[in-house]
Length: 184
Image (cartoon, rainbow, N blue to C red):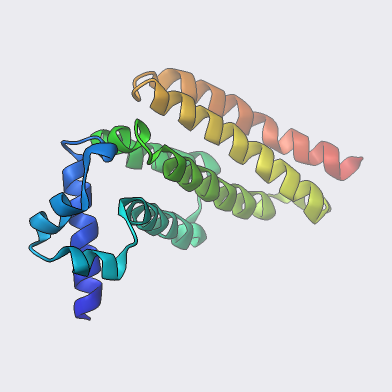
């Protein structure tokens, strides 16, 4: 129990530091000073700050994928990722413009794949479409969303109309794509 609290405290301190500092400027000492523990305690849980970054992103992936049963529309699920990024804008940007970019990209792609797979499998148009083709379409949609998110984040998260229009266009064509695959 205490181990979970300590690990959570380290993650929380790291996130707080990300509000004010780029990821590459945050040291283990800064994190442990904020928590009030030793460096040895930090290294008991994480090998380095990069491992802590991965831990935080993995926790976010879990939150998004665990709510998979509540998927109303793929669009709303994708927009919830956008909302998460927007709500932690400075944290995300401080990670994105440093060595945390790779973890953020992994988070977006992994979460988008999970959403796309579950939604496509539930679509009536997907009935009769092979698993392999469903997986290909899910990957296509996830990569599209990934590209939208990378571009939007790289632009400091300001051009909301651009990503919404691209997302809406892609999702509008999805039933037709699945129907074509089924009827082929």
